[in-house]
Length: 88
Image (cartoon, rainbow, N blue to C red; front, side, top):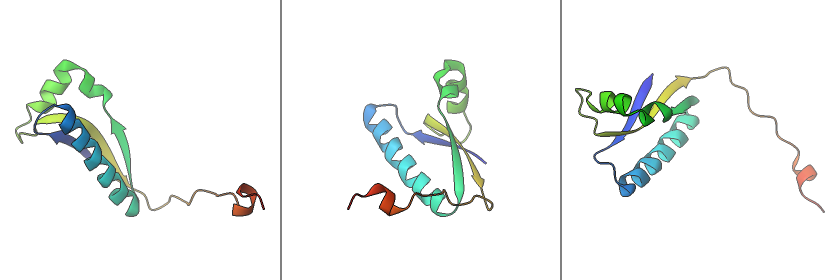
């Protein structure tokens, strides 16, 4: 699934709000074993950004493209024992 994170405008305040929304979205997604691939590079191209912005849904200013996918096979990351990290 591909999503567009957008804001109503393109000011630094809205960039901050988009970042906060992205943070909440990624935490919620990870809690459900949904993983994300983040893309901003396509939006740096003026023509591509205008094309995404002209979507009939009226998305506003696109800030981030995300691809989301569910994983049921990911294993927990191996962790070092706490004793290896803390000196007594």
